[in-house]
Length: 120
Image (cartoon, rainbow, N blue to C red; front, side, top):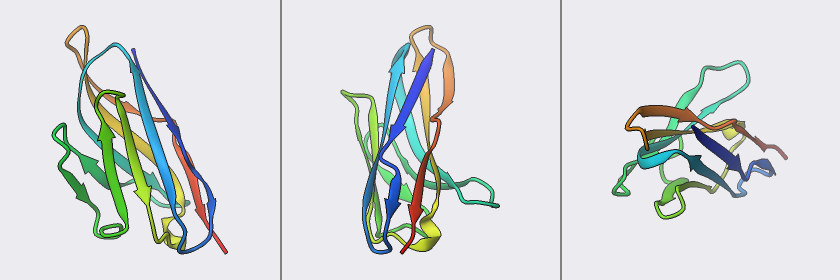
């Protein structure tokens, strides 16, 4: 019913930047909260950033000041601009979207994940 497609991951040197995108499609009536999570090798998935319908954002302390989340409601798309990347930012990044479907069901949708590798 709802599909999320992520893009923008890749290999970057420490101090570099990447921009992730997450595009939602399908039976969407309204997208509520959106967020980014990541899972590093051998670790549990952790929350990275969140953004409300109105555009208010919150960030994990580990990325505050370096990552910026934004959304384009007209395109049902969310972005994560990642600057000053560190080795410890290496992970698979997942987007998460709270959706109200056209049949008025609440869904918690996840993207397929995109790998970000920070390495010199």
